[in-house]
Length: 195
Image (cartoon, rainbow, N blue to C red; front, top):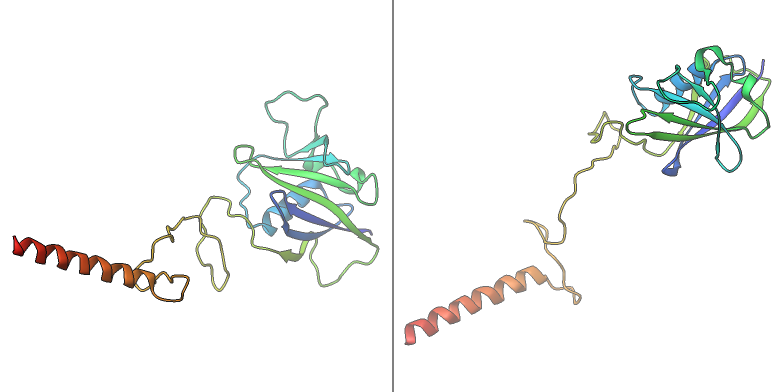
């Protein structure tokens, strides 16, 4: 039985990818589920695959279900379509789109075909993870010891308490600024008493 290994790139950043291994007899529904698991997404939304060429142009659609939209060609349905039946060349590519509102897009590329099945893996399986996955619903916190992204913006242009801004000569620019402000306040107070 052939084992197909796909590299699933996050479309917006190709340094973030997951390698998944599936049997050629498994369906696109199983590939869809392992991609969601690999990227820590839930399975609450619509999804579709497109067969693709080397230029990542969308071809025949392999959809989770038939959606209420116009199709040039009737889509294949994921749970009725085996992955092996849609492999046309050794570097076969697919585009995977999840959650049509957010339009998460992933580039899926066949990177290896093997006749050897690993007894240690339960197919479909995630075999490699590279990069921090995008957060499906926005902000992520720290989960266990995993580093995750936080989408808040901080204004770091001004020094905050405990953090000074160094001038080019290595002195503490903020402290010098505060000193000169207090000196000018003292001078104005002194000049006010002379009058």
